[in-house]
Image (cartoon, rainbow, N blue to C red):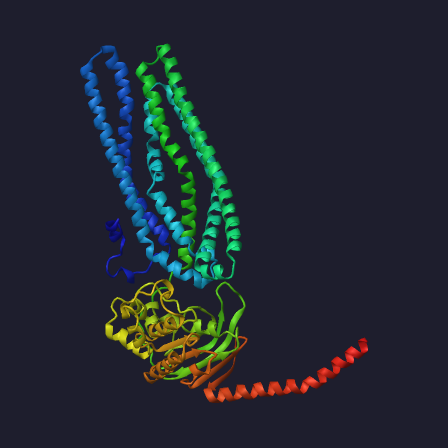
Length: 603
């Protein structure tokens, strides 16, 4: 397995080559070329399958009439060797299929992971977010199973039919009619099972989404007494899946059993036909037995195909979905020139932002510019578009219109890995990962130095707190940072945001879970970043996080209504709020008089 994976990894420098338009089709073509080599072994296996029929033919037509034991022993040794060779080549073929499937999987890992990381940013439904991985598992399972062997064996069916024609034309025509009947049943299986298999697969994905949601929110479900309700939802989803799965299995089982019965009928019919030919002195007893065995061998690949048809349908549907998803989530072509680290300004020009999967803009025509060393307070009421704007500034969400520029270059002119080094981001949900504190701070960069990690921790004011952890920087924090408190997670997230001296740092509610010590450390971190020439943008409803900033931008219903020096903007907002309050107070007596008059008229 490891060797197969290593062979599938691209050589050094291959990452710079443009990815094919359809990576799934490219990997399938590679697998098809490898299958061509396996087909040679299938030919050897099928030729060796004739040995049993030939052995029976010789025993009945030569050994029994002559009563020659030496001939029987010689024939038995020969057929034993043939069976051993057949078993060896059959096992070798299965092992090769497993490796072809592994190479197919390994060759798509980069594209699959890109799809998994991109689908949530495109507004994909939850049931689709894990679908690429499930599809890849289904395709690999089919490619490494019995299914491909049936299709590799089918081209050799004519060999058995020709041999049966050589025994007697009537035997050959009977075998041909039976083969046509089995193939017709295979095509009927394809038509009837397609819809049921697709529905069962979709319901399975929905059930998996519900299971993931329950696991992710287990604490809330338990604390708020929602366990019984979610159990009922799970039961309904599981019942729908099981019902459709039974329907798909019934179709497959009925057709598979029908094909098996037809095969038994043909084998017995072939035996009866051979007996009639023997009685009529048109064939020997050996032909009667050999033709029955050979008929079973000829139809075996079709029966195997019917037995694995459900997996084949699932694999075909998975390939179709996988091709569409990989095309839709393919990363843009890498810029031909690597731009230098930005160091002068951030410019936002007529920026409009739409949430993935939505149509109505959340942020509309926002424009502002910041120079190196400036700090911006991004203000506004809830649902005014602050977080949406911050996601567009760091490149998480694509701009519906307008552009975000760093030193004059639009964000898409940088490679994603390069842009990530120049940006620091702390979301509301800190989103730490299973690993050590040091790994989370350095963004899991294996080339990061201890000095860079310590510098980020000290800038964020979290160094002493980390030293108090059980294993210091080597402390494993668990999935989502579960071993840390909310405040500790936020401070480690701040250290991650400032790692590598980023030019643009965006902090969304960075002090939501901080105590007084943490807020003081946050203020010092913002001051240190600005002094180093970074641009810092902070979203917060608590004034303590805004003290170290000099600019302010106020959003109202997705539009910028004020931008400028912090104190000036605060004064304008305060005056506007006071004027609104005065107008409301002045209008209150008149409203009261109208209400009293209305009540009097009503009485």
